[in-house]
Image 1 (cartoon, rainbow over the protein chains, first blue to last red):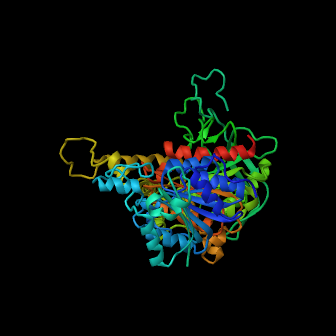
Image 2 (spheres, each protein chain N blue to C red):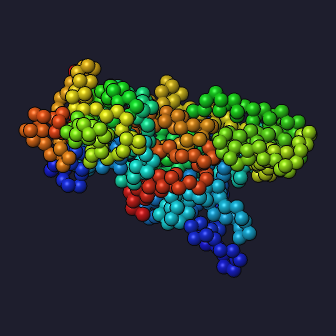
Image 3 (cartoon, rainbow over the protein chains, first blue to last red):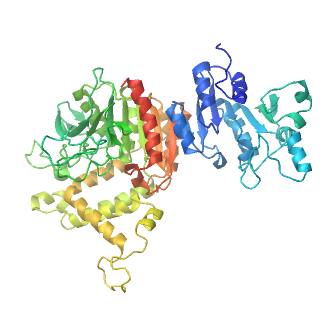
Length: 204
Length: 390
C-alpha cells in the first residue's frame, strides 16, 4: 500500500482516506473541489463520483479529472441504486441539510458503509457562548446566526442517539480538536472536547 | 483557414476565420434502419484545425435539428454571420482549434449539400424529395463512422453535440464504443417525451397540410410549402426559449409602443414579430422534407428500446467517458432528462460528470455565450486535449 496521506490533504480528509478500502467504489456527497477523490484515485485506485451543488466546484473537479455530478443533496439520492458503492462519504455537509437523518439513511441504502463528519455543537466553546447568552461563532462554526448555512447543528451525543434510534451501527469514530488531533481526554469527554467528529456507520 | 490576402475584413483572433466546406464521397454502402440501403452517399463537411500524425486529436461535432456543417468561421469576407457554434469553436475556445482537428458534417438527409431530399437520386435522375428514406440517429452515426474511415480517423478524441447533436454523441458511445474516448452530451434527452413528440407532430402537420406541399413533390411544381415550414419553425422557437427568457426579451412590448391596440391581426407584439422573422428567414435556408425527416429522427431516438427499455443496459457497452450538460431553464429537454442519462451511466459504473448551467435563454442556451458553460466545457475538453497529447 502507498504511504498515508501527506500534508497536501486536509487533516480530516487524510483520516477518512485511511478508512476507505483500496480499489473500492466511493460516492462523495458535497465533494467540494474533489481533493478527497483525487487523492483516493491517485493513491488507492479508488473509483467514484463526487456530488456537489456549487457549479464552480463542479468545474474545479472536472478540471482535475474527477467525475463530479452537480446535485442538490436535499432533493434526494433516489437515482442511485441500492448497494451501488462500498462507501458513501459526507464531510461537513450534514448540518446544512434540510433532513440530515433522511440523507444518512439514503447513504446507508446506496453504500454498505457511510462516513459522516460533523461539527460538535456540544463543544465547550459553543456551550460557553450559549451560557453567555450568545450563539457560538468558532473555527468549526464560523458563521453568524443569520447567515449560517448550518440549519441542523447537533452534538456528538445527539448524533449518537440518532444512530441508536435508527439502528445504525457506529463502526468507528474519531473525535478531533480544532487542529484535527485526538487523545485519551477527548475520547473520554468527546461531547465536551471534540470540535469535529467523524463516524463510520453501518446498517446495524 | 486564414482570410485571403487583400480581403477588406479581419477576423476576430479567436475565430477560425474564412472556411470552405468540402463534399466528401462515402463510397461504402450504408444499410439504414428502415431496411433500405444507400450504395453510396455524400456528406458536406467543414473541418477546422489540423489532424496530428497519430490522428488522435479529432473531435466530431454533431449538429441539431436545423443545424448544418457550418459550425464556425465565415464563408466569405462580407459574410457577417458566423457558424452556429462560433462561441465555442475556435483558437483558444473550449473546442480549441489549436489543439483539435474539428469535423462537422451536414447529416445524411440534410439540405445543405449532403445527400438528402434535395439531392439527385441516381436511379431516377430526379431530386429525391419525399422518396428519400427516413433516417435515424443510428443511421447518422453509421454514416459518420464511414466519414471517419474516409478521413483516416480510427477513434475520435471526443464526439460533441447539443440537443439532437447530443443524442448522436450518446448513440456513438453505444454503437461504436471503441471509436471515441469521450462523449459530450449537451441539452439532450435519452428519448423524446410525449410532449416533445406532440410538438413535432404539430410541426409536421403544419408542413403536410400546406396546399403547396404536394405530397412532398413541391419542387416538381416549382413551389415550396413556405407557410407550413414557417409555422413549424415558429412553433419550434417557442420551445427553444424559457417563459422567463421570453418575458425578459419581449414581455408585452409592442412595436408601436404607447399606441392604442390595432384591433386587427397584423404584427403587433414584439414576440409576434420575432417569431415571424424566425419563420421567414428559416424558409429561405431550409427544406421542408428535411425538416420532416429530422423531426422523425428525433421521435424515433430511443437507445433503451433495444435493451428492453433500460437505458443503463443500453449504455453497458460504452467505454467512453461522458460529460453531460443541461441548462436550468430548458423545458424542451429539461435537466431531469439529462439526469436520466447520468443515472443510467452511474448505474453501470461509467465515468461521467454532470453540470447544470444557470440559464438565460432555455434550450437555446447551448448555442449562446455563457461563462459557466464555457468554463465547464473548456475544463473538460482541456483534459481531453492533454490525453491526446496536443
